[in-house]
Length: 318
Image 1 (spheres, rainbow, N blue to C red):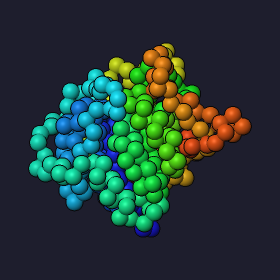
Image 2 (image 1 turned 90 degrees about the horizontal axis):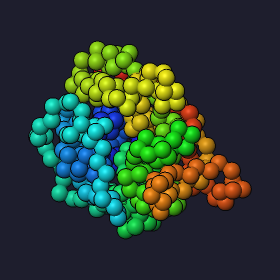
Image 3 (image 1 turned 30 degrees about the horizontal axis):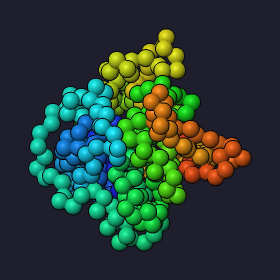
């Protein structure tokens, strides 16, 4: 099978780190053209350093890293270091990587790379706020529509939000950017909390990954253990009287989908993003009824196979 040409836009971040490690490790299946970074879980300088550091740990310094935008389109940054640690990688020791990012900025890299390839060939995975992607669409809308697909982690419907009662972090952090992306006419697959909460990094997963005893596996096991110990992840959000079975693996689901789309169930829908209300900022209105929606603009992942995600981690971190 020919590797999938892929660009990964991210804000590492603990679960982004797991997604990055999986994408770097799956070199036989993913032709990773580049990594672009944005501010999100921590500020841009740290997300970019973290991407370069994970690249080094995974022995993939052949893949360029390009820094993107340092703040949302029209709002102040919302940093999530309470969930990701002050450096963005939990308790994992950080140090300057041996190779830093390229001089070309993320938006220029995206435009140049997409335009140089045949239309409908490059997939774009997005695991952070959609700021870079909205900027791409604003600057070069026809170029963005040349993408084969945008597979993103963001939004919530049935599960409610993880930063407010109705908003998931990536959309809440830059709702205007998300609104632009969902209205772009691009082919979009959206992993909201409804799907990612089905994939949990249980203690058994952590132990199995740690036993691989590779640098990438150690990184991922540390990320999962850190997430599992966070107070917010110690209880089941759907039943507060029950202990959680492990922290959700939000971002790795995006990479697992690219490797095995058959492991997930999708429903065509229309997604609209709330940008005006203070109370429901970043809420994603996901409508499955065509008569109400008028026109669909995305596919919503409704069901995920957690064992498929684990199997890829065990395979590509070994």
